[in-house]
Length: 278
Image (cartoon, rainbow, N blue to C red; front, side, top):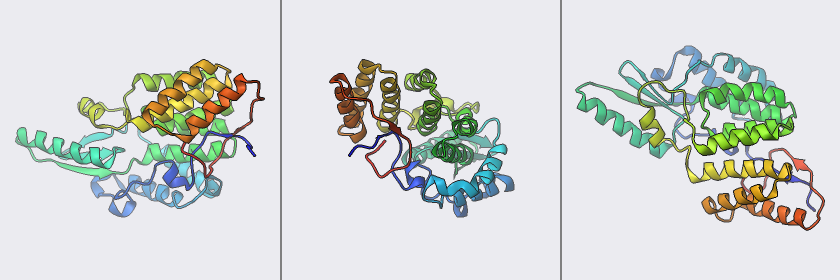
């Protein structure tokens, strides 16, 4: 029996929202990644990530929001501090290549440099807090948290789609569609004024097929809710070119066919589920 149309992630929580990054736990966080406050903030985030479901996060949410109060105005994915380059929020394979490029550039300029992998603490804390507030149907609070991360990582597809869930709950679907369209047209993933933004845009995975397919599906879902079925169908089909066989896209295409055939709309279910990929 179909109980609803899930628009969310699969469990467990930390893996589903993409916050687990091998090698970036607090124990491996180099001192050069930040000051004592930054290290303590990451420790709090690490503790929150031990919870397996959003509802269990309730006791950690005040601490996460305290972490967000420490978020800087700018949090570049590539940040040069003296001789050190801090690299945040970039996939392992791309970070390795980027590190090599940075070292080669430094050597060609006859200067010493060091590149360190650092946790993407504040965008991840914003995402986790947003997931919790959306789960308990408090989208205004979710947006307040997510906007802190979105300001730092406007190109992060998970922040974008989680923010879209808040807007869906608030019935601000046109606003959600505009946000998805902006992302799909291409936005920088970082408030980065270090002079390395061009290199970052080449190395970051914001335009990867899976991310793009996720945002296409999110926009398509909003189109369905507005009964713009042709636009929704086009987005779902475009997502399947990028991720062939995706269960969510195929299920929604069947749902659209049913609506066109006279079937009644099905309620939307928002939650963490063991279901096909978002």
